[in-house]
Structure formats: structure tokens, C-alpha cells
Image (cartoon, rainbow over all chains, first blue to last red; front, side):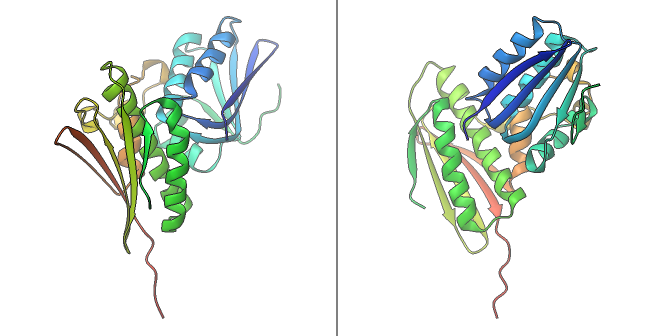
Length: 107
Length: 144
């Protein structure tokens, strides 16, 4: 499935819905959306990943970029990730730095 | 499986992924092993395209083949980019993996996922060609 990343800003929370396959060919698009979010100085980044079916290291590097670009105080939430994609996040140690949740309810 | 030959560009990653999915399905790998192989091949192909060709100012092709035996699926990537052994990149260690993201280095994650994704990985360079060889064990079939 082709990759897509859609950004929605609500009350300084940046929500990005990721679908399809995120690897080196699609990571530049994800990075572009992260940059669009970063200029709006969000207080939180929520990544809706239920329909992200493939995640390679290029996508992980964009997550590192997001944290470094937005600052350590901006918490990152990974929502709905499952199966091998979730396995990749955990294997790579990202679960130490992001909040992994099944669902996300607006606070 | 019939080998494929694709331009060494990132646009080829999609086709490469489809080929690997077909091979892992034919091999009867479970979901985790099939995904691990797809991820490992994607990472190696990305390395070849970016380090072996693009950064070196070269263009060329990647050959990909899948060979099934009773006990394993072997995927082989061959290219004529500059000699590049993916194992020369330092994979993150346990301490690195526990670092907060803002302190993480972006290097080495690809080879880390390759080594985690398959049962065996090897690299050789001969006669002007890089060969990356990835092996996944097939599930045992009990006859009778």
C-alpha cells in the first residue's frame, strides 16, 4: 500500500495519521509532515499508526528527527501500532522514549 | 523463483518488497519471519542504493533472487556499486537502545534490523559485485 501521512493540528497537539509502507522511499514525505508540524510548536505529537503496515529504519530515523526537532519536552504518542511494526519499535528500544497506546482519547 | 533486476533507485523498494512477500509466502514462513525477511531485504537494498550507488555518484541495477530449499529461504542481492559491507556499520548496543530519542544516533539501525530479522546474514565481494545473502529457516514439515 502506498504511504500517506496526514497532519491535523488541534489545540497545539499535532496528530499525524500514517498509512501504508514507511521506508527510505517514503520517509522524506513523513519528514516533510513532521517539519510542517514542528513550525506550529506543538506540545504533543500523536502518531496514529493503526494502518501503517511496514516500518523500516528510515522511518525510525524520522522519529528521532522529530524528537530532536521538536524538543525533549514534546511527548510522542504512538497509537494503534500492532504486529511486526510494533515489534520493530520495541526491538529498537523506541518504547523507552515514546508512549505506546492502543487508542488515543483527546484530553 | 525467477530472479528480478531493477534500477538501483529508492522507487524500486516497492517492487523489491512485493518480490520478497511472494517468496516468503511460497516458503511458508510465519508472519514474524516473513516480515523480518522483508525488512532485512529492504534495509540492504536501501544501503546498496544510497551508499553503493547514489553517494558514489553511480547508477546501476540490483539483482534479487530467492532460492527455496527444504529447510530455508535464501534471498540474494547483487549489485555493482562500490564495495560496501553493511556489517562495517556499528549496530546499536543495549545501552544505545535505552537512550532517549533526543540522544540517539541515527546510524546503525538498518544493519541492526537486518541481523534481527533473519537467521543468517553474510556478505561477499567478488569480481566487481557485492553479494548480500540473507537466510530464513523454513518451518519443519512433518510427513506422515
